[in-house]
Each structure stands twice: as C-alpha cells, then as structure tokens.
Image 1 (cartoon, one colour):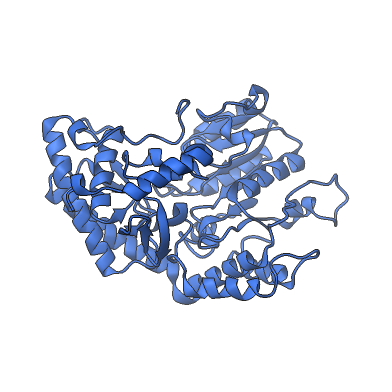
Image 2 (cartoon, rainbow, N blue to C red; image 1 turned 90 degrees about the vertical axis):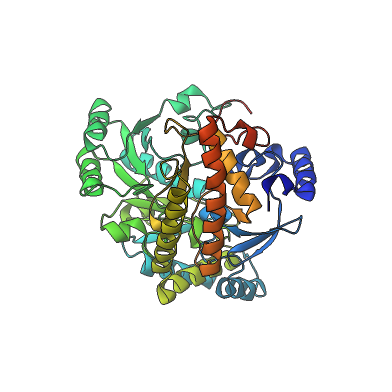
Length: 441
C-alpha cells in the first residue's frame, strides 16, 4: 500500500484517549507513540503467532514482540494452556504453592550455573534486588553499570543517570558510576579509583556485538580481585542466547543474574538467580543482618510460573534458541540483500546476534538518524510490518520473512530517493520519531 494512503483513524483516536487517561499514552515508554511516525502508531487489538492486528483491522508481521518478551509468538498454545490450567486451580494463596518449588526446580535445571532463584514480576525489581544484595554482602554503596547498555532498572539508582532523572536526588545518582563495555583496562581503572567502594559490576553479558574472547572471564577476574559482586543482566540474553542464557553459552558464571522477558513469553515473571551464599542473605537460614531481598504480593502467581515452566520446557524440547538464530540469519541476509540492491546497503544496516537483531538508519554522512528511521518505519508499516527492531520470534515462517524483505526493499527504494535529495523531510509525514531517554517531551 502507498504510504500516503495508509491511514489509521481508529488507532489515532485511541491514542488520543490513551494520552488523556495514561501518562505518556502507554505503560512502557518504549511503546509510546513518539517511538513511531506521527499518526502511524497502531493500537493493537490482538495477536496470534508472529502477527498482530490493530483496531483499524490491519494485520502486521511483528518483530520485537512484547519488547522482546514474546519469543515463541503470541498465544502460544503450550504456554497458554499451562497458564489456563493453573488459573482454574487458584492464582495466589496465603502460603507458597507447590508450583513455586516446581518452577524453581525447572529454572535451576535450565540454568545450572545458579544455585538459588527467587521470582518476581518485572525486570527492574530483580535487578534492584541484586544491587541491594551486593551492597549488603560487600558493605559498599557504589554501583558500577555498563555505560554502553541502555537500560537496567526503573529505580532511582539507574534512572538518575539518564536524561530523565527528574525527581531523583543527586545523592542517589552520585552512587552510580559507569564503565565501557569490552574495555577491561578502563574498568580496572574505575575500580582502582574507587577502591573499596564499588559493591557490584552490572552488565548485559552481550549486546549488539559479541564479547571479545576473554572479556567476560576478565570481568570475572576483576570482580574477584576487587571484592565486587558480578551481576549479569540476562533480561534479553536469557533464553535467546541459549536456554541457560549467555552465561551458559560463554561459560562465565556471574555471582548473580537476572532474567525476564522471554522467560514468560508475555506473562509477567522475572527471576533473580545466583550463588547460594549470597541469595541466602535474603532468607531465614543465616546469622547476618537480614536483607529485604524480594517480597512481592504477585511474584509467585501460579499462572505466570506455569507459563515460565512451559516456556523453558518448550525451549529445551523444541530447540527454540537454535530456531531463533536460524530465522534471524535468514532475515538478516534478506534485509541486507534488499538494502544493497536498492543502493542503501551502507545506510540501512542490520546488527546484533541473529536472535536479537536491530537495524540502524544512517544519514548521508553515515550518522544515526531519527529522520531516516521515521521514513523507514513509515514504509514498513504500510507494507504490513511492525518493526521497532528485527528481533524474531519462533512463530515466524518463510512467508513472514518474505513479506518483511519485500517491505524493506520498498522502504529502501524511498530511502535512496531521500539520500539522493539530501533531505528525508518530504517523506516523514510529520515529526520524526524520538529517543526514549530525553529531558523534555
């Protein structure tokens, strides 16, 4: 469909109603309509498999489903049935359900590098719990985060370091320092400069590029030598890199790690896992000061834990991690070929591990461009592809990838025109998409 003919009147009206009732018009900033071309932010009606439908009746091939949480596809029958079965037996009780034991056993069998696990509902809670545990165990106040990775928690210790730090006292922000990914020397310099002050090093073990040989092992050695707790944020890498996460793939064991997103295939479940001696500090069988680790009313809802168990079983029995990589490799090859064929191969660039692909939109000088991202996303939407990223789900099939590659080719043809004109503005249809982290709306 020509992009100028692609209109979303019902979605546009729904977005206005959303903004009137919900700050930002969504419950996650990354889902905001400012992340999409103006007036082309679909409001979703429902989804199944790799497809979603908006309230205007349009069907899309969807990528990055559920902010990368839905890796098996929407309404996956095995996961849905597991959750439905537990809902009929009660969702929450005054004492632990036997399912909590079964879910812990299932998780620790899947991630054997951990010795204990505690479940919650979102990634921020478990990541902040890891920080609190590290501070308690070391008696230190400062936290060192990887500067090259965009998000760790909604809590003050991290958000205060972003451009959206309004409302967070400097006294809290000053306790967080940063180090660059992949640079052991710079990290050691930081640890030396703040000798005896840093409680933990927290990072995603991998991102849009693979860790250099020896890097993660080097971080392990630095943490040990400087008495820090090493925390791997496996919200994205967990399951997508391997069933046991990046730590299982690369063979470097952190002290603590946090999981979420793909763990529930859209159901609300996250996990803090790690060494027994650390995790027990949040328990009842130790002689140290007690740590208020995680105590969530809904953290052990039976249907979410059942969903997580079904997800892990599906990954192991059906080889999902390998399928995600195969699908991603096929998609990346198709997108690169289409982009090169339209003369935009140096401007529309696919990056990342095959199971976690993103795309970059570069201007005439090769710089990242929100304007060109807007142009590209407008064309994809008109071609029936909803793609804030190219992160795949296992529900994609050959037809979905073919449709995506066709939409990319059509988008790149327009992209080439804009590059030749030296100005993408005529193809934007309104204001450009905006970065999530910015000081002013």
